Each structure stands twice: as structure tokens, then as C-alpha cells.
Image (cartoon, rainbow, N blue to C red; front, top):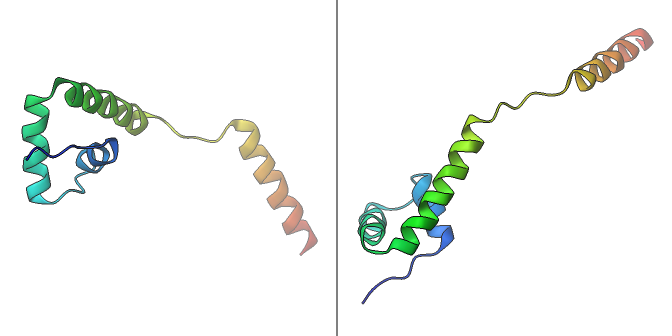
Length: 76
């Protein structure tokens, strides 16, 4: 019997959240199923983009926080 893997299974695989047995099954499925491999490659690319993203607040946000903090300190 061939197991059908879902997008959720691939995401768990990408984040190493699968059991050893599932990992082997998915690895084999990726070798045999070109559509599954294409979806895996797409998800993998998205994960890499998210991992590489630089997340910083804008300058205006930092200024707003500092301004608020100064106002709170002035009331003490």
C-alpha cells in the first residue's frame, strides 16, 4: 500500500518533526513522485526565504516606542 503524503506532512518533514519511519517513507516518496518533490521544493524555498528574512521594526516604530517610554517615565 502506498501512503499519500500531504502538504502538512512535507512541512513537518522540513522542520524535522517526523518520526524516523515517516522520514524514511517521505524520503522514498520524494524520490519516486515528481509532483510531491515539486511541492517539497516550493515549500523548501519558502522556508529558506522566511529564514533569511531580516525582521526589524521601522525607524518610526522605534521612535514611537521611545517617545512613549519617555512619557511614561516623566509621569513617575
